[in-house]
Amino acid sequence: MEMANVKTIEQGFCSLCGRALLPNEGYLNLSAGSHICSHCIGKIRVMHPLTLTWDKKGNEVRHDPIEALSLEEAGRDLENAIAFTEELRAKYDHHNAVFMVESVTTEKGGFLKPQVIYACGRVVYGYFDPQDKARLLHKGSASDVTLSGITKLASYGASKYPCQGTGGIPCALEFSGKNLNCEAGDLIVKD
Ligand SMILES: [Zn+2]
Image 1 (spheres, protein in one colour):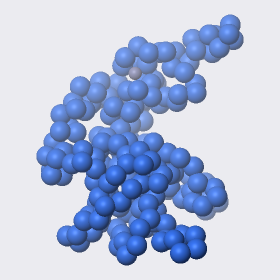
Image 2 (tube, protein in one colour; image 1 turned 120 degrees about the vertical axis):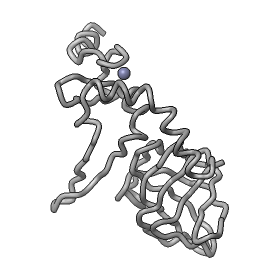
Image 3 (cartoon, helix red, strand yellow; image 1 turned 60 degrees about the vertical axis):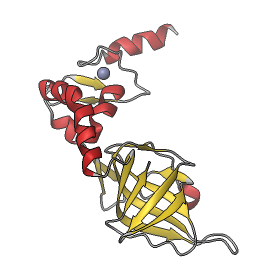
Image 4 (spheres, helix red, strand yellow; image 1 turned 180 degrees about the vertical axis):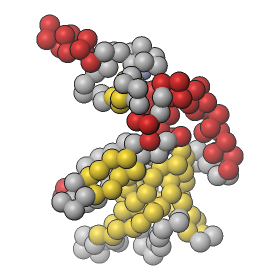
């Protein structure tokens, strides 16, 4: 326990809220060398979506716009995050949560079961959890879907990894159903 304490102190404290930075929770370095904690990152992530690409070897490369912020900018964003989300909500018909589909991967379902759809994209705002009832909005039609999982992008089948489906996070929403059409540009919403 003594060691754990030393480690916590070595990581320092969040420059925005003062919380101790815990190595297992993750934190970010801002442009001028200050650090912010996972809680503060989570609050402003909706304003600064994370994007992922893959290098030639297939390794994930994170592009995180929060790392380019100054401490002053991050502090201002933290104050404005709720108003920012409310503006998005007004823009998207006041749904509780909105997911933007950017690409779709499908897998065969089991015997006599419908295909499994992985809608890949990002959470625009709000949050999605496994077992959530949501609606797939495709070209003017709406289908009810029950999410079976929220997974990291490019992780499927036996090697899929769960992911938090919160505002600004790239991930895949997994669901299945008969005669569902899902493609880039569709929205998945929760009310
Ligand atoms: Zn913090």
